Amino acid sequence: MAFWITYDHLGRLLIVNVFAVLVLVVPVTVVYAAAFAGDPATIVAIGLPAAVVGLGIFAPVLAAGLAYMVKECIDNREASLGAFFTGLRRYAWRASCIGICYVAAITCLGTSVWFYASRFGATMPWLGYGLSALALWALIFALLTVLLVMPALAQKNGDVGESLKLSALLVLDNPFFCMGIALHWTLLAGLAVVPPIALVFSIAPQVVLVSSAYEMLSRKYAAIEARAMAEGTDGRSQRRMKIDWKDEEDDYLNRGFRDFLFPWKG
Image (spheres, rainbow, N blue to C red):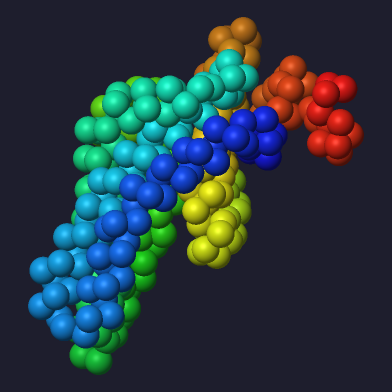
């Protein structure tokens, strides 16, 4: 799904990607300059605020706008650049609040991984390393929920708490699926550091991937709920259900190499 969405809407996604990179280039440049200044005071006074603005505000807001644009691509098979700016306007405040929450949580958890091991590792290793391991698992869980929170916001139009809760529940119920998505996302992020790719094809493919993942999960639960209502069962028996996912009805999921070479013959 992610591949064909990108293929069908490549031109608009490239334009949005360039716009997003240009927005982020200022805080990234400031962080880079502060980090290599060699002055701790400069890093704290300039680098950290720029990082918070870039990662906690600009990046989440741009991701929310892109997620809304991808939602339109999935729902209507068509999306304009206006959909991206509609998403920015509609979700800017909530996305920035979510971003700040994640910056605070990831900073605290990342610091805790180091702090407990170094503080109690020598005197009470079982406590120090135990707390450090707990913080590490919590950090991994938080990072996995990051992948789905903006698609959840764009799809459900909930508030900050509802979006965070939904993304957490999805990760808890689909851990291996989410870890697989995280692996693919990491590969795309690794390619995004190459300068030419960073400008034109870095952020958009990552948002398309996680939005497609959210869409497949939403279809899963919609099918389970519909089957449960039809059979009079409850959610606890969902694992034993034989469900028709109706993937054959989705054009994004039923294309092959021929469609790639000869798209006009579809």
